[in-house]
Length: 170
Image (cartoon, rainbow, N blue to C red; front, side):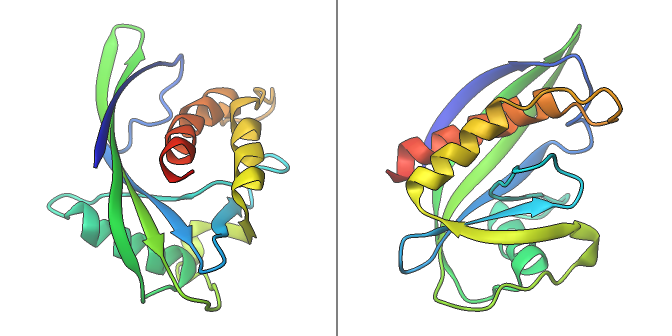
């Protein structure tokens, strides 16, 4: 597993709820990558599966749980891809945050959201070039004045792990 150290500055507290997460690069036999969008995301925004790691939960356990909750997938082969260690700076506050990224190989199967609280509204399978384009969209989001979500910073933060993923799976 390759390890990364990243500093990220933000003006908003959009990651404070958890300290670590998993990120799953779900790949099908035809080499397509599964991405999803939630109903509240800005138009055209899709991303990889992520989810929080609960207290006393191992990253591999969180990976299986999150993939099941978000996609219904239970049969998979996975291997660690990267550990991204963030120092998130918000003014004088510094928060450590970790993303455990995995490549997850799956066979053909139906994708079904098992946890409706995930608010996933769509899935699609993309090739690597399409995935690169979706990642660019994450990095170019603008703050929407009427939104409570800081899409600009959220997108830039999410883009970091997506860029690392592209670097490692190409």
